Figure (cartoon, each protein chain N blue to C red):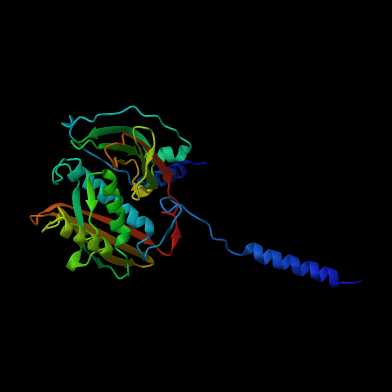
Length: 201
Length: 140
């Protein structure tokens, strides 16, 4: 009996089987409930969750309450100050701040300056150059200063009890006006507990 | 056959089992000063078990001086166990178009046995007047 064709077929079948078992990447909705949740990290949905709380509070306490100050007919101008990362992780605070900026921009009541930054560092140096030249040729001596600055801190607290690990991430933000008064402050704590990485909330 | 010991044991087991469920007791002012402006709602229930975990009791809304609508939904866990679920508010403008923001996300919540909680959301812009609340069971 000639066994070569059988062996060839078998090897093809094995190859197909192995290829079929290979893990495939799939897209998931980052705002949906099927994203990966880990105890030891701030996950993408945690930033969105914290930003949601912050923006709801900011709209309710300042914008919807009619307390927003701005020159007549113009939206308020916001500058982004220091957001301190007091966690053990290397994180980009824009994961939180950008969401808030976008949401504020969509209210139509607040715009963010990209040419006025902490320590004179502009977020967009090209825009800063254009603004300076425009102001120079227009004979403006002082550019419009931001009406508010946004500052904050992200803090991490870890606990362990037996096999259970718990991480808490505290997001704190303050909105300060031109007079140096914090006109709005908010804090959101996200606590996660588990033994190992899990999928879903 | 003397069934008394069996009945006694069964009663003890039942009492022990029922006392294992920690439910929530509440107290509040008999005549609340604040009056909620309740709104009529339309519900689509596709998950009956979720409707026991987070049953919608009522929805009230308010509009601030800035013209932003805020809605508050009261949920009740009618089951005898603590449960987890996630929720998400979606907002729509006057033309019925969804207003997307990067902060619109499913938010996880826990609810104790027989507990009533409130979840709320504020419109992302003054033009957003309609909303939809989505609820889903959380799986560990």
